[in-house]
Length: 203
Image (cartoon, rainbow, N blue to C red; front, side, top):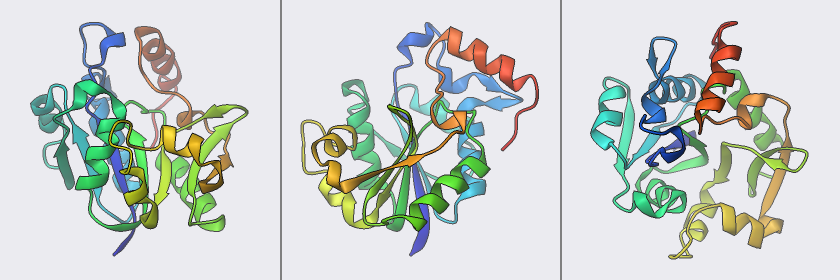
C-alpha cells in the first residue's frame, strides 16, 4: 500500500470567477488544475485522484498524459461535500490521504512535504488540518481508518461537518506558508496571485 495518496477536488461550478472556469486559467504555461496536480505528483509517493464534475471533459483534457485516476462526481451541483464523497469512494487505498483543492496554485511541493512530515510526527490516527490563527487551510490529511467514517453522513459527507462535530478526531497543524490558505475563487484573488507569481512560480 502506498504511504501517501491524494484526492484533488476539481468539480466545482466556478461561479465566483464569472464566465471563466478558474481551473482552466493559465498558471505559467499550463492550466491551473494541471499545475496543481503536477505539484502533488512531485510531493507524494501514492496515487493522485482527481474528482471532476463541471466541464469534466475540459478538465480531463487539461490533465492529459498525467498518471492520475479520474473520478466523476455526478452530484457536483450539490457542492463540495459530494465531491469529497466521490473521491473517498473512488480513490485507491493508502495509509494517509491528502484531500486538496484544484484552485490552490500557490501551494508548492515543499509546502505539501512540510504538512506530511508534521502529520507523521503527530497523531497519525487523527485528521490533520493546516491552520493559521482561526483560519483552516487545505489540503487536510485523512488516515486510512477514517475514510469510512467520513462517508457515514449521506446528507453532508466529507470532512468539514465531521471534524467540527468530532474535534477529538482532528488536530490542527500550525503553518505559515500562504499556499495553504489562498485559493483562487474570484478575479481579485487571481490578480493577487498573478502579482505574487510574477516573481516566479515554484513547485
